Image 1 (cartoon, rainbow, N blue to C red):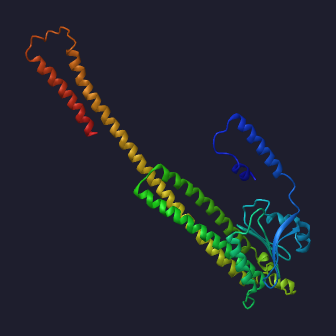
Image 2 (image 1 turned 90 degrees about the vertical axis):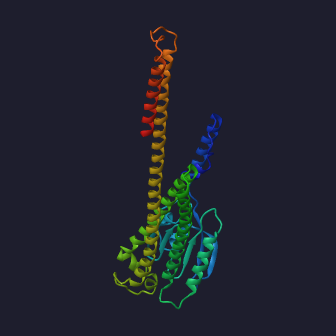
Image 3 (image 1 turned 30 degrees about the vertical axis):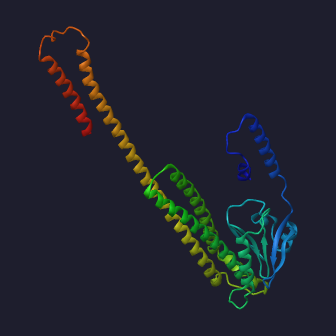
Length: 348
């Protein structure tokens, strides 16, 4: 909610009158955000045959909890009205709750409930995911049960989203690093900072997805409990008998790990580039300081010669006026002193 409030504020400086209006608006939005959440969720339901039986239907939270043997607090993990940036895979008695990136779903042995994002329309990514999910659930000839095919579609959509964003960021950063090799300017350096922050954010989200999958893999009880079809058919399964699911999850965990490693590599390249740019800027600054020192010494040399000439040009008697060689001695001394200081400047 804080991000939503901050996004509504203008970026320009506010006058005293505008500050009061902005404060009142923030208070109104904060109070509105603290109102009790709605008691309904909007869902799309796919049946045991993989067909959409309900599209964007509204259901009471209490009814969903009762129907699917859930605790009310479980729905907080997938309630799209409540921002939750931490991906989670929760295993319950009759269902698996998934909240990863753009997907919030409840997977059962014969049903998949997709929780729609509140206040948004179906995006292209969601449409592609729904199409693949329907196709995968209708494919009954495979060795995987219904719930595993649903999990496969969910994880595949998550992986595709991460890969697409990784390719986009790689293209942006790679092009900018190539530009910095040719020319370093302020605009490119600001863009590099922006891309670095964006990449760091992406890396954090990818690591959270990886940790969510690895957390399930580390729990034998959760892995065994995810065989929902066997539970429905009253088939007992040993605690360590979960090879099929483990292979499926490990495959996706490995691919997410590769994305995280690639993000780490790009971040290292950005840091190396930043260090090189800083060295180049330090070198340029040192060159400017050296040039300033040379100019100062040249100025001092010319000033020293002018000082001598000015001292003898003040029309004061110094008993050297009658000497025919005095002018040459004074001139030579001024030129020699100035030349010595100027040559010393060029040698530094």
